[in-house]
Amino acid sequence: MKYRFLLVGDRFWGDDSSSAELVANLSLASYPSLPLSFSILSSARNTLEHLFQNCSRDIIGRQAGTTLLLVGWEDIQSKATEQQIEFQFENLIREIQHNSQTRILLCTHPSFQFHSDSRIGQKIRYLNECCRKMGKSMGFQIIDLESLFEEYQEKQRVRGDLMRNLFADDGSLGNLGRMLAAMSITRFLEIQ
Image (cartoon, rainbow, N blue to C red; front, side, top):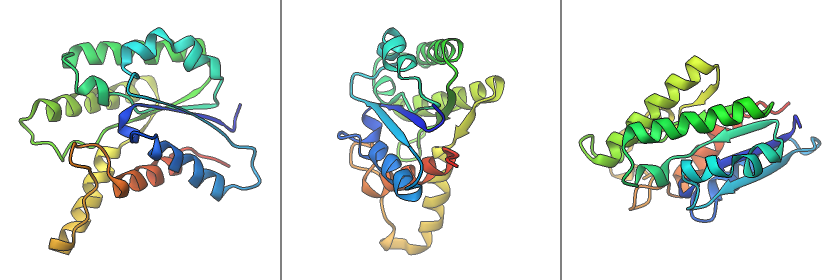
């Protein structure tokens, strides 16, 4: 169970789960002698409501030693309010926490690619604050992709016109963004 990892997300991973695949591949390349096992639960259906309804089979039933939750892209783009998303997110986490022994890692979403007054930007920032608050109150580790991406982007500003974009046109992660997310997440898995 210690070396069994479950990566839960949605389209934010990329349409083909490429970010989650990168996490698995970077880990496997870094620790060739360990019996690592990765399951990736990533699809456009992965709303918080769907994950909660199928939690016993799709999350708890996989008996992972570590479960990484990077959910919300589908919910963020839905008509659900911030409070509804928070309620569903907390219910999902409590369901996992009370019915499994898995170590839970929570991820924030980068938000700076959206204008601060945009509806999506507001939802992402709200969900990130909920994630941080739940992590602190429940003792979960937070992988703060929002802060990591902002720091990376700030370092890149000196490049001016040569600055690389981390996002695709629709606001999801581009190739460089997926690599940065995968490298950041891999460091937090604590594989030893």
